[in-house]
Length: 259
Ligand code: PLP
Image (cartoon, rainbow, N blue to C red; front, side, top):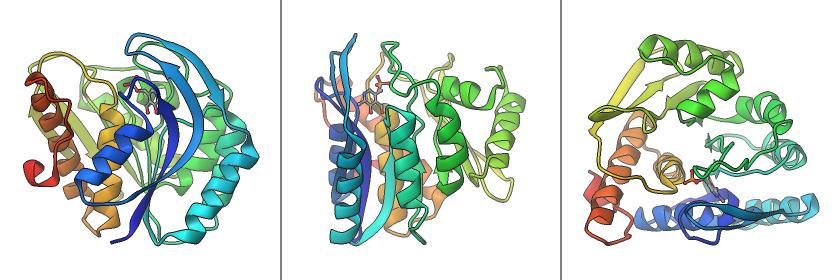
């Protein structure tokens, strides 16, 4: 089976970032190949320190990963700054036929910036056009498109149109941060079709759900699964992880559970 490169930051609380990516992919039977962009010291409530790795170190990791493994997909999470975004975009622009899942991590749920403000433009211009799918939450969709959060499908559609105009063919806008009894994740695909994945909202919050979803999608794409099915399985996995957590098992759902 082809491996999945996961590019992102570490999280010393174990909630989000690369450890979540690796656990998610392991549960799908896929091997995750980590490229560390930043080390973070954080708890569930606070990001205490961030150390972005020197660009030459990020570059060396990514080049070694690409040289060593057969890569079926790439998942991108926390990038930290514009230099890292540009460097990664430069390397990935030379790849062909490897789907890139971009989770545009901007701010932690505890409120700290994980991508510098000035790096947003670099991400939009250099990384979005290389990606197969981008998976913003409601806030990220608003920040990256400049279209404020609305209360209906019409806003999501406008944001998705804006993303697609920036060069990414597929847009999955995650509805977890809205209110209501159900969570709706909306996929706007390359043909302009719109599919909604609906789940009952579960109590509480959990760190790293965005990482889990994007990694699950990348793991499925690496196995040749169609994007719509991959998004559905990813959402199911997040739902299962919530259910496991409610039973005090900080587990990651498995593909079997998800299907
Ligand atoms: N920390 C790191 C290293 C991450 O990669 C991410 C998300 O990708 C986060 C924090 C944000 O996760 P959360 O929204 O659960 O705080």
